[in-house]
Image (cartoon, rainbow, N blue to C red; front, side):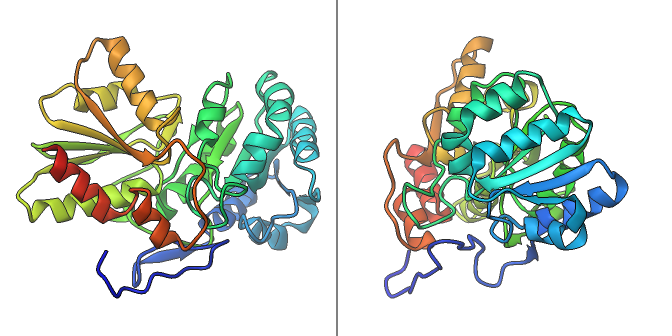
Length: 327
């Protein structure tokens, strides 16, 4: 971070897009509308956060299939479970903190235990808001990974989200989507990529370093790979948008080598992508050291997103520095 650079974003609904970067407005809302036009079973629900989870796009297109449940997250998911029992396909949106912390029992016993097709849509995952611990869902994947039957998706960009939505609707069991909303960066269109539920993809090869990433950190990993090339470091990037079930075959094929291996995630280093990859490697008998890049095991500060991403190691510059230190 250069001195004199003025870093500022709205603390609540901030964009992590770089200045001038290509973005797509409300990809989740528009993808849900497209899916609903093809499938009349799809309904949308939210807990007073339609505008802030891009569910308002669906509400405008299908007012008779949209349900505003108010500030009652347990009711939101209980109602979604009831709708799924009747054969509907609910997408229920709130902030990730409220889904994971406030409504866990309802998601677990009403939705996951009977294995219903309810799609939990969580806004502000990880460090995508500057509002502090009450809104920063830094541990949501750690909370949800232990829930049987639940599929967890951590999309990188608008391409991931647009392609994931219809696949989530078709998936018979419950899902949790770490939503990126508003003007979402469009990155993966340049990498001959298609989202496949349950699959990881090698976006670029590299002889020296492997970055295994999910969520917005895949965008940062790709940027870091470009910058590291100027240091004559050849970096592979493996995008893992589905955290559970985990595509061990694709990822471990990259881990099992003499290259430097790091994981990159917008989540605490406890219980997320790093521990998923490390656990899979140990079970397979792979002894490669894996270095985590992620959020620390602490409650984070409030502030502007660029400043926070730099402070907590999620910025591209911090990834580059970490790789160079480890080589």
